Image (cartoon, rainbow, N blue to C red; front, side, top):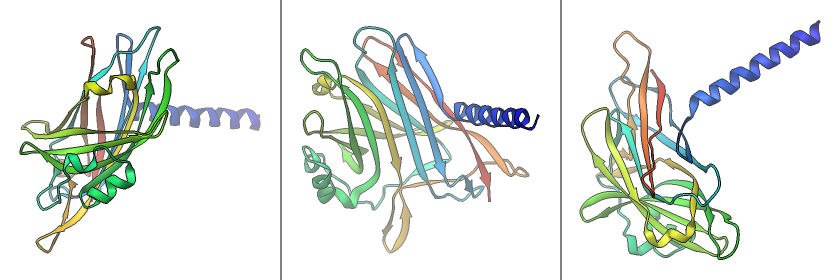
Length: 259
């Protein structure tokens, strides 16, 4: 009897963990493309009105279902809740030509003072007359500017099947509404032989000093109504546009607490 009860408890715990895990990531499928979008903000306990430094993590997995070659990813868009803020005033700016081409070490030597994040990517590389080759590499994120617009340069470097690097500029746009900050990147056509991108994981965080005062690249507050100790909010919304017109738009809802 005790063994049966223990088994029931264990199964209940496992089911709870599974449900919590599934609730944490948003998965959306269109035609033969499935995107799993995950992310978090830390700390989760924040002031009600004053913004404080935070770390933002986004994690995406892309799967191709069925036979045939997967469609190419053309554009990535990420929208961030209006209670989060990006502040790049006073932060050194990296220039595109300083990090392309380069490996991780060379990129850090050139623009380490502009770094705002790190991450990883995975892709299936298309080789002539061979099956897609899985490749994985590191992402270094740098604060930059293109034609007067603020950008996040995602420096991507992989060593398999051969050492290769490219830079993906995410243009930072500010708008009104539920999502006040948007990051948009267009994948270069020259990278078509990289085949199908299968994952992108990026963590953004940076503190620095400007005019003798401490600053932070990312900050946020918890906009819980007065009298409530927590709030459920729309954390982020993403959009992945693929060749052929397939568009997948998963979004995330999160909870913050008032300190």
